[in-house]
Length: 625
Image (cartoon, rainbow, N blue to C red; front, side, top):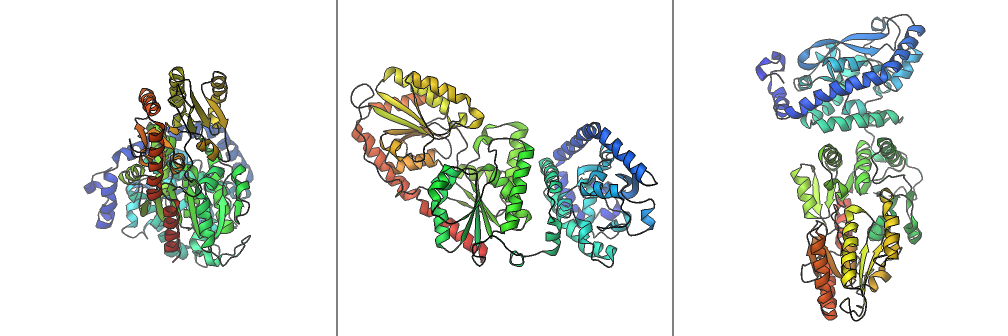
């Protein structure tokens, strides 16, 4: 950045100084932005060289004139440069009409129409990016006559290079259609469109970060893929009441959309919330991949959507399709409030709702495997969460550690609330009679359960290793593993088959109802080092009166009073886990039973699901007032 006294005099004003001070504190991001522009620019140039050659030949063959359209535009510090674009109009179009293009403009050639539709006319701007006159992300470069109309604050956009895309470009991607009905296009553009776009441009400078630029580029791809007219919605500022709803049971009832990634999440953790909202007079839309648990909810009335979600995948095309799917569903049903759970719905459903002006509530069910990642991948994913959470009407946190992390990272802009996980329905998980048990050598067999996804980050390798060591010394023990194997970790299938043959563990698969397994067990072992929100498995076992052995991981440790309702050990330390299991085996069975009952009382007082349901009811009412 230039020194303040070195920028043009007409930019040296208080309105611009505010933005200058913000950018001067983000010099690293500015350097990363420029480095990315150069590296990505040359990469794109190599990839698109042949397509650009074909387009050039097509343009030259279709109408007289040059291949490129070169017009003076304004970039950093008011510098004038000639932009590179493929020519999409007849020659001398500047002399035949306004500098602003409307849809159906007679000056646009057939090839030009296609290029504009998919923004391919802007491919040559990669030359401007490499030269430093433009960036991939930034305020679109305006013609001189429009820059002269800038207010003092708008001049702050000249602190950074002009861009190929931006938040304003995404929201006004169909700008030409929006100007169709204007009698004086220039006047409408200067008085209405330009100020509206500048609000987004200035906001982007205030919130500038390198990762923010990357997200904007990704969203641009999604926006181009989405043929629907999001810009028109923004310009006309339609309210939800003005839009005709279809496929609704009763359009007079407010519609609440609940979005998550697994049917277990719906039935096991959200059922009471759904029933509670229906009882309050709301309609429900549930967006979740189909699964067997929906069979157990067939008597509950709701609109159903079956999205395709690759929960742990990093395929940007698949994620783009998911985002567009959410956008399509929200446009179709127009929910009054969207409730999001789990990672990808928290990001993509939130962004879709935000674009459509629909309020949403995020639930941080845990930051999952993100906390175990490092470097750029972790930074990028955390930025996606930040993008979602900062637009939320409220963010519900399931544990204080995640809440502190989000606040320290400035991921939250609005309201937030700490709730006791998803809560536990203590009636659905009543106190169960405690089985007789010995010491692992003599007396009745001692049964341990692992209940959860068969996933490395959930600590299953630690559970297996502990089982091997304990079974060697205490043969009168049983180690069960209950849950589905993550598709990305299929190697466990063969491993568990081998361990079962050796008599070390018993793999019980995924179960519709785990209560019978809880009933015959003496303790639950939950060795998770995963980014839990609040472990529902531990809450359900504690509610059933079962002894808990778990890690000091956030979302696990909160469910236990150490030495009173169970044991807590340091996650990842197998030796310590084995010692805790041996301590448990050395206890009198009556002591185990008494500690389990104390655990039920603890979760009943502090983790009742009714607390969570009421928190949602209150927030939704507040939003809809």
